Length: 232
Image (cartoon, rainbow, N blue to C red; front, top):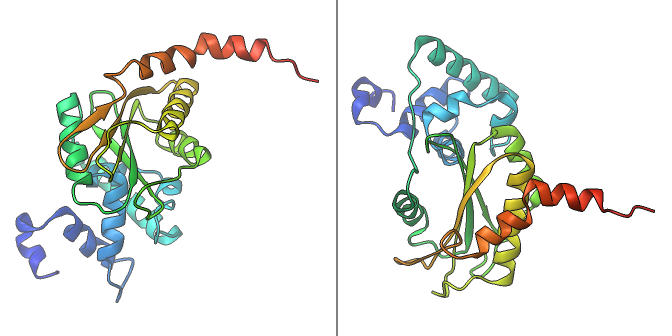
């Protein structure tokens, strides 16, 4: 890998990151860690913008690695070298990205894409129970990630391996939960896509469900609900 760095234009991002991690992880295969980091932060740019506490949320990252990466990021920032990542501005962009992420998977996955204003992808959070027909998500975990990453907007996506694009009741409940969390944190909820594993999508934005959820969980309605609570 060090020899390949001499012609680094032909190296992938994760390979460059592997070499960088040798500095803090000597005599260790850093390939899995490099993939874990880029799978969460989407790009080297976002990786080097991340705070120490958020870096430590990634499997395999302890205090020393987090501090090391933060220092590298600070150096890059001061040198003016940090640039952007993937852009998800349109439904076509989103569907193509989801297809690239989910095509060929044999378990059900859910992914949350945290977006900056302007559509640049900021974070990816991936959830799976390694089950073919279900995936569980902890609302507290999502809330913590929103607090850490502070996105402008969120897109959700998951796959149905039975080929059906009909949302389940659990899918609807989850979509309502995300809308509620987004409303409470002043974050836009752009869409929730269901992907059939081949080429077709269901979009909550294109159905009337998302509009109803936005109305139900609008800040005015939440305030009214809180004001009308009867606590004994």
